[in-house]
Length: 118
Length: 111
Image (cartoon, each protein chain N blue to C red):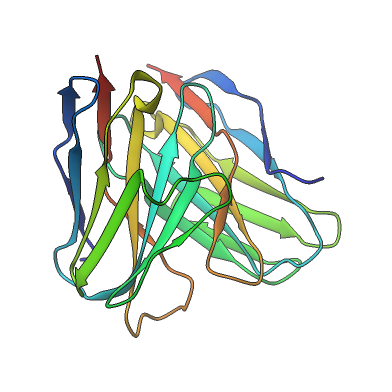
């Protein structure tokens, strides 16, 4: 149980285009999902907290107009990287917190998406 | 300590060896400490969530301890096997749901 999927697993796009990454909780519902980014040899860094039916909360330094987050249902959150630039190339990974889980702080992770902007 | 620090960065051991690594985290405003096991191309897998000072948790050959007063946690693997090869992440959780991760310890177990 508690499986989170991400799609695509790997994407290459041209500079200036937009890319959408999907995060789905497959066997549970999640009011809250989290988006992280990891640069080479760095730790996972939280970008934003996505709440179903409301606006996402972005961490300091993360541009909300560049990284659009939509959490339209209890099982799906999307991250759209708009007007991508080579410096946006990174590993993006999501996690989801189940509703009514055994512990309020459980988070289950997807396998991540490797974005390369050329 | 402002960040979450993990040591060592990487570790090579022989099959059958026991090993341990360290996670240091801010002791102020502490809520929980998470350990994850992350194999390449897979999702990070939750190992332990620990909240209480002195807590000790065990799952098979893997165990972890927690010292919230001094801000550190140890992860132990007894009798390492090649399938234990992975990156082990720890993350500190303060008063909110946010997790602050360390860079991880990459473990390689040689057969």
